[in-house]
Length: 196
Image: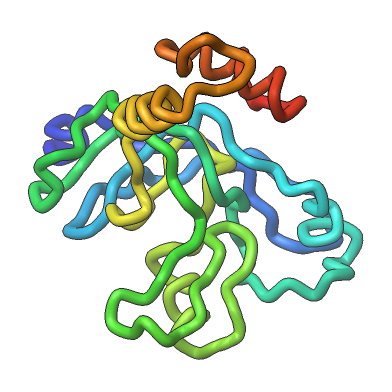
């Protein structure tokens, strides 16, 4: 209990769990994971739902995706950092971040990565990772992810805005200088933008 209080985490959290690809998902309460070396606990704000999710988690999994059950799906997400271990001094609770669902093996760069919360891959190494530490995804109140998969958004957006400013976009007399201008520019130029 003291560790949960130290990290300002609840002792439990809720997630959307699938126990079968032929049964509906249920909202289930889980014990909250604590941050360990090389991992970060995140609070998902906006999680990706792939267009073919019904063909993976429902209707008997006609795509034949390999994943362990029971499982909380969900891969890429925009999150707030909830808790960090001592070995990640740059990351701080409350930071707005993007987490990538592509989890790579730390001890083998040639091994096939897995997609957290959707596909455990087809090698014994990737299956072992998803059977254990990286089983559950982002369709929950909290998720544990590898620290190397966490990308701070403020610095990424500042870099992107700065880069766009150098190229002088044709629709603007100067590059976008604020997030609002960036989203407006993206929506007008590429006909799509995601805002949550």
